[in-house]
Length: 504
Image (tube, rainbow, N blue to C red; front, side):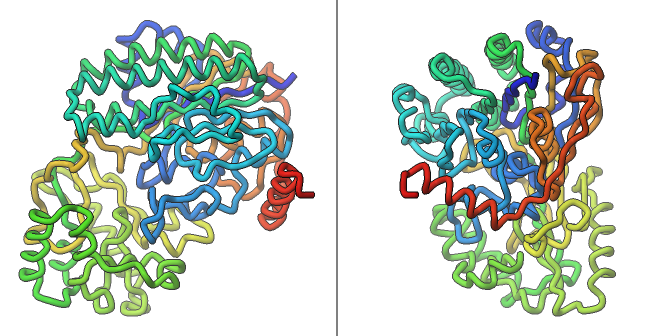
């Protein structure tokens, strides 16, 4: 008999916290004693907006086309812009009753026959759910955006933020219990996004973080006890670390090497840019300093994020783009493209400031991403070290002290790839072994394998066969794969929607 699956998402939890929890939180030791665990490698950059679409599809951002919280035109990323089948599309097609609870980055909420979606309230003060009948449970549902407002508008202390995070998590758990009392779900994704906000505002307070997680793991244990017959995966979409203290002005570095050219004198434009940064509100200075994104044809086909008025992109061999990579002007460099790219990679890998390496990883884009949106990925993908924040645009100097974050963050995760993966249940090995590094793409095909559902053959992830007990039926059968036509998937979804609405 196939066991059901519960996924508990702890947003932004880094792998390095596991050792702290094992030593300091008794309830976690109890949970941990019967699991297998791994480092859950996230995307680059390591952001929820990029990582979760990859988790939902089993595919890298070069296939999903999602590279930020917003698209190239500053619109909130829509999940329906991803034409690949998502986890809920496939579960729905096999009539598996599913709940996606407290979700992030599922907008607009899908309309299906067998799946329920309840939004976290990160981007809206309005409680969103689908189908709408579930709104009856959500009268007191707290919105994640209220935690950010508590800091920005009311100047809440770290302890007040941490207490409110726990209050939100407990409240949402009570609402969740009411829902599952009346519904028989076969798959549940229970996302806890408040942990990410806890890290952003309290990361430099170790005692407070530990105190908060003692309560969080007590609550997670209650959820686990409610689903003792299910296979359970506890995952995070990325890690966390302190906010960088040093800015690396990468366009200035490129200019110093002769790779980037300015339309005006670098000094003059840097003065104007500095004044804009110091004097003007963020939204206004962005409009004045950054270029307009009106050329939809240009932005739809490549990653030439030509953002700053003062930079001569046509005469520049290389420039910083998408806040996590360097684009090379192929038209300008021609046959020297690969030679230039290798030179840049070599120089960046060896780059140091005050004895510290600036980068953890410097990669060719095809080393990490592939797919129909590969042209939108910078030619060189960067992952900075914990101390360094990558900054675009003009500057007087290559390195400088990081300014205060406009959201008041003390924690960061843009380059923190190492999340957590913990698995246990009736079909999972219970020897407490560490199984190394796995990819965020691996979760979706592994879930489908548990249910015996054929996996799309173009996923980037693999089935984690090593986590299953050798005596389990799941371990004994081979994963099934199928070729899925994206066009047929879209048409099928439309037909289901019309049937649901009674139009056919």
